[in-house]
Length: 482
Image 1 (cartoon, rainbow, N blue to C red):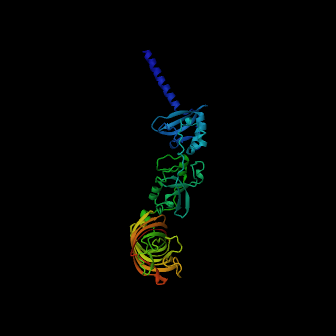
Image 2: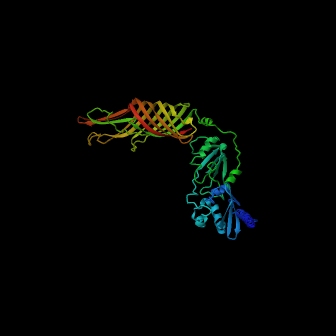
Image 3: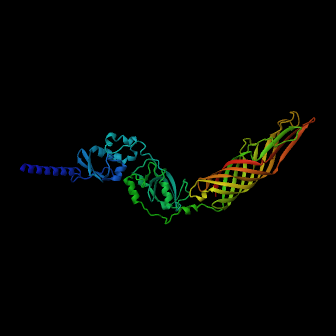
């Protein structure tokens, strides 16, 4: 009986001693001061920084980590954990004192040879993970933001939050030591426009701005930090986010319907420059060199390849959500011939209407517009060239190959119907493609002839212009809205 009592007392003492030893191992040494591994993380490394720097990646549910000296050659990290008992991990002092600060303070550029050469990879991987060369690569988007007070800010998008964005003018790999010198916060409600985006105006519309900045081409780029992606953000940036003023200089924001109304729908001028390909060309030239015959010009083409460069001014005097009515005046000059002796130029005056199938004026985004078009116009053209006499004798007064200069005018009425496809780059600049079927009614056309010869042999040369009844036009115009 006495024997069993002694065994019971020994068992209780053993359990008490074991519990005391376990508690002492999981508690920092009494009177010891924590080690500040790096000023970037402080004395207590929180759970977010542990995830960001991938420390103790072989363990889960770590709430915080604090380093304490155990002896002259050992440093222990005491880990507080959420769902499991606290844990202590021992490391050699030189790893924590010499290499871990380099790892943390150069985390984004750890792949660089000048940094990684200072760290023994095999030993450092016991506490952190050494990444490959693409980890710290900077792919941040560079944007120019126009605020609603008309001030303009340019830089790379560094941080995206639920309330606004932080931009920096510094490029290259993120550097935590210098970032505070030029980082600037912009509240969503203060943003009027972002240059180079499809959306014309934002006017503080948080929905559109969040969609834009959360897009994979902005928010998910390497080097950009976002609060909504659940990816860890280093402590210095979290502090900047916390300290930045959230006050907006604007008290209101525009709705989507209000943004759609911002595009001018009243009369406006449009300047354009463009060219087209005609089949057949809208002005035909006939040339005949005959011996003792009258000329037949319509089957004898001297130059059917006109591709005029056109400069046009358009005034839209009636505009609605689904149609518009405009007047145009244009001047054109032929680009179809390299020979400077052949020139076709003139002017055109007309009215046209459009029915919009898809109108950019009804959208808040810059994009593609489709419309049907029809109109009437009056065209006046001038053809000048130097033709050759191909008939005759070399010893006559008008020998073969002699020059025959001509200067001919033609006028016509035109009716047009077709499809327009316009892509708008900015509020002012767009490019328009067109496919037009055009009917022509010739009003007046010139023809010149000459006759020469002797000894009963007569030679004729005739040159004239005329307008085909039906032509097809494919072309493109670069447009600028005033």
